[in-house]
Length: 114
Image (cartoon, rainbow, N blue to C red; front, side, top):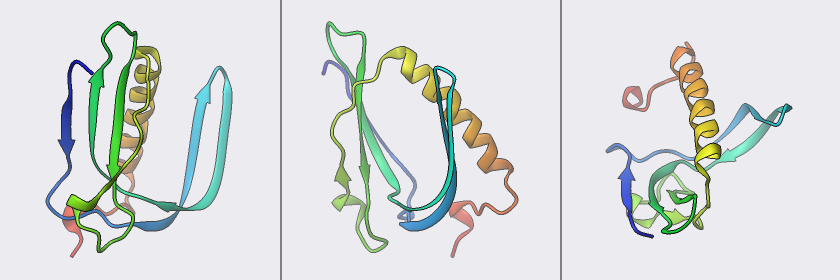
């Protein structure tokens, strides 16, 4: 990796939860939608770097698996290779879901939790 940036999230530790979500992934006109219960592992940070000589970059994520787990004890994923085209599609999908979460009247922002 030639560049690396480490990003972290807020002061209060994220909580693990089992939630019911609707998710979708649209690639090459294949739309997949499903409602299911799943265990959620909050992302607490990430690292990302470019690969010299490759048309890709490599992110990996830190996450916690328990509400009592300290942020310093977060697990890490493997590095994922992502091309700029896939990243642009992912960014568009993230923006769409950010808008949905921010507009949701039932969503509670983490800073509002006790």
